[in-house]
Image (cartoon, rainbow, N blue to C red):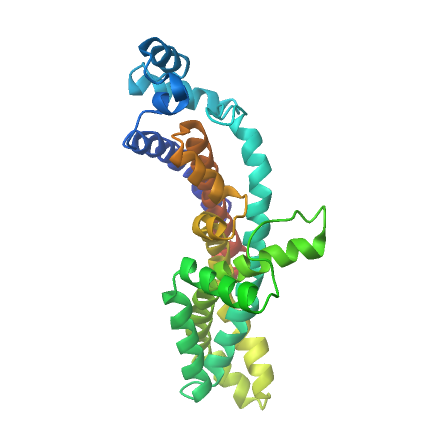
Length: 315
């Protein structure tokens, strides 16, 4: 098991290195000149533009620009925001907790809805409950987040007046108001993940309930509830647990549109504003941190699968 984990951990570094190269290369394809954006009213002065390009290393070859950036990253310096005039690391530390709070709430909603629905759908296979659960799952996978967010704002906020349509309040200021401002976007994010959990749980449960150990448990006279809860569910949740780590990474990276719709100052809004303003250091820092988190969650999923699957512990 230790060799397997070390092998997986050793793949993280080259993966992140490749991601950093792709981040830096792809952003060079973005239209526009950052120097023109930063020059403002003085964009017509060639001397000002030349000075800005020299200060930001924009006048160097792209290879030297990358080596300069990645060298700073390796010592913990993600650069300096050209627009906000603040360290990128400071901006990330300010915005990341907001997105983590939103993603955590969405993840809990997805678990509460998806896993029980998947279990019920498998137990009641080919019934109207199974049909309804599959229809809801298909709806969750097919509905765009931005459309669902707009519809919830119109219905819940505008027509019913139950929740604020946008904005964000930190939990440190007011816990209940923080929940009020994040419950709708969390539901929007969690609905599609809930559908994924439902479909995987249903599939895993159906497979588990057809195994010999389940038939043996039924032959012993155990009640159906005990058979489902103690035998089928315990084994069916093995792939779902590892799936959860990957889906949490999807929540963090998929919050861009949702945060824009609900005006939540998180990771997503930070990177959108940075792209529109050609703030390359912020774009690079946010994408690199997101990739690092997602890679770490992939590694965590591998570790969890080894820990909860006894057959792999001695492999």
